[in-house]
Image (tube, rainbow over all chains, first blue to last red; front, side, top):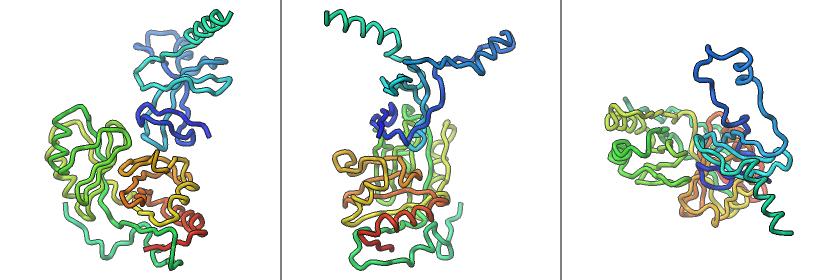
Length: 108
Length: 198
């Protein structure tokens, strides 16, 4: 059983209710005709596929049927946070690295 | 819009209703047939929208996540921040829809009659808590699922919108196309408690 917090239903729900819908924060080029084929192909086809922290979209398919964003660790599957569409993540690979560093510094 | 005559109509669970099998059944299923169901969408921040809906339904739209509101036969379920399910008395959905459209004239809204696509089923009895435990992934204990709460989740892997009532029973909105499957699951899952269908 894996629970994920839905920012619209405002509670933890079972993973079975959700579906994963790909990388988040991909901005459509403002003027597609003005950019190179390579830049357009990058927008259409290429995803970052990181090992570690990944910001991605999830869909609450069996629940409120809203899309939202999640910050998930692709190695551990840990969901660090979920946030509404249009918002920015408070946890990123950088903030986690800084937090880990200060933790280590405090221990020594 | 004219109200229709339900005397010649078959509800989604019509052919199952004759099936009663237990005298002291732990699970009692009752289909609340032909209730009018409308899907309503609009901007919850717009006072013109919320007050227009309230004037038609006689009850304010529930704004808190997973909440519901009642006014006699009219039940309003919160579905998401800008979407509600209105369950009204059988045959009145056409009139309610027309009244809503008149009251919200010119607004950016959507009212859709979905009465024929789904049906309302009530599950009660001493075995219903255990039945829910094995049928849905949602935690139906009263500490997590108080009276009046509305939860959209899965029931035996099919989508459902369920609400806890004051008498401890559950109202489930299920899809017409899944009603056969739902009943077969119910029959199997409530075998150990006994099932009564009315």
